[in-house]
Picture 1 (tube, helix red, strand yellow):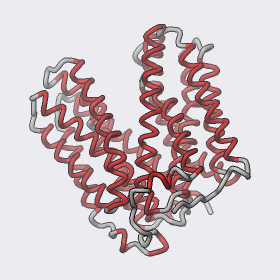
Picture 2 (cartoon, one colour; picture 1 turned 135 degrees about the vertical axis):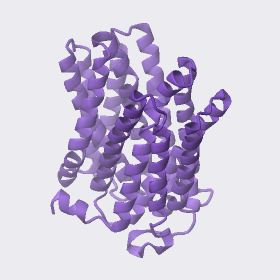
Picture 3 (tube, rainbow, N blue to C red; picture 1 turned 30 degrees about the horizontal axis):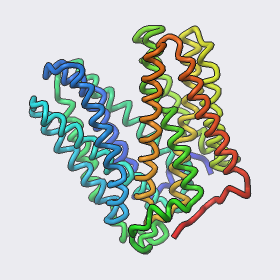
Picture 4 (spheres, one colour; picture 1 turned 120 degrees about the vertical axis):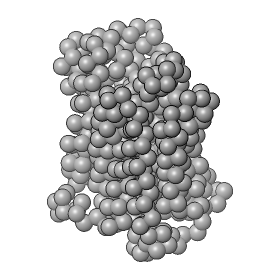
Length: 406
């Protein structure tokens, strides 16, 4: 069966859930990349205050991720997503009024992050539940591609309104999330989803859930790999832009994200579906970490912008291989009644890796921005650990294709 045929075969609830993901990506990314510009240009805040809001986003998002997972399992993913969207819509509308009190802006920034922390594990859980029986690698790869198309479109919308000196991107974001909220109300409640598409009959999550998750070797490996992945992925948002802008100028930063977006949108589904036909998920991720290793082993010798951008392409091949496969492995290894909590724990592992990666980048780039060899070597070491762990789990005596706990 062709990839297109498999995508066309997605159930109506799956298509609706992916449509919601697309709409929310448009709304979120029409605001987030441009809020700093808005606060400085329109509200005349300092750059330090404006960039603080990005930190508050992250604190709110990752602080609420585990709560979002627990709410997903305790109540339902659909309901948790609705709470997240309602919070986000309210914040955008308050921003649109032109609020200028610094304390309120900080609260709003944190709340937008919280809304995303509630939404993300619930959205991953819902698409896994309504798509039981589907090719999970294809499903999560397609979900990630849909998300990135929304990111690109949302960023274009935000950029258009900022260029026109308008704060209307807040209203556009709220409208996008309102449509997503309306679509959510058309989805069946978890209990109404056919039995073949969910595990809603499973007993509710109890206080021993995290301990049970800790006994699942596949899930532990997924958490470790996600921590390593986020350590590496953070360099795309911190080290790469700083290093390239210093060495080749501001346009180099745009080139990085253009290459990254092109590889994600054009190749993510094709590469992952092809690898899934021939390799286990662990070997697929092994190839992804090998792509990271190749990137960081060669970065130290790069002198031209063209060669640097080509390496960003190899780096992105690692990104598109590892990220959705971790979600797919988690959705296969964990019963649906625990899936929200599992994605919440996975988010915490990502936070640890991302914060560590950002700290390493800040430390070593502050010492030698033009010669970040130590940072590249650190990332190479983390990539090599990822290669080793995925190889270990690809061995038959360690690899359990669908480990179930509980």
